[in-house]
Length: 221
Image 1: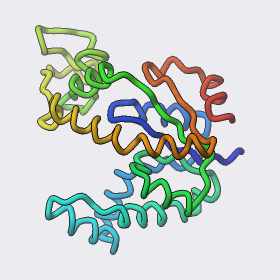
Image 2 (image 1 turned 90 degrees about the horizontal axis):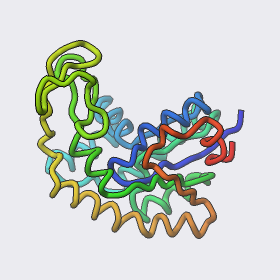
Image 3 (image 1 turned 90 degrees about the vertical axis):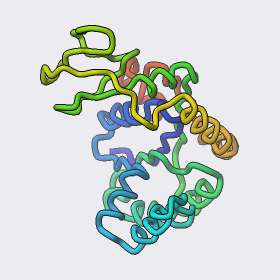
Image 4 (image 1 turned 120 degrees about the vertical axis):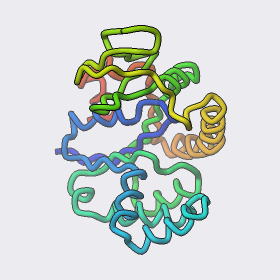
């Protein structure tokens, strides 16, 4: 089995989780590594790095790059990565992290998921879930099949009545700030991997339309 080292890169709402699932169908053993999972694991197990990260989080501060970099370095040193390669999601976020990653290992491609701000806005501001079974929906792109009234549906999975309620952190202002921050940090990272000949652009408007053959061509499998 071919071993690939891939980075999934793109703005919030680009569909990195969906696309990683499609890649996993082709490369079932590849280690899907998200920085969110790494943080949760280190915090839960109270590792030295987890405790260090917690000390910043408790003060409402951003965890410094050097702590995040060491968590990623530790994860990439494990046996599953050595055996089957990796799909890195959420790292690198800036040039400091990109350069650190290049010192750890050489990646095959950075897969840049491109999607318009209008679609991202609908994906993020329209998301909600069933309070009973946690099935995820989107008011604009993936509502439940049976509608009761405006903003009320019957859950497809468990039959509970559910109402559209926007998450407290999902507002147009916070989303704009997140996207502006992403773009500011992303530009030099994209340029860096393009210069290395490692950049692959992916139209993420509707990644579910891609067949396995389409994805194999993208990742040159």
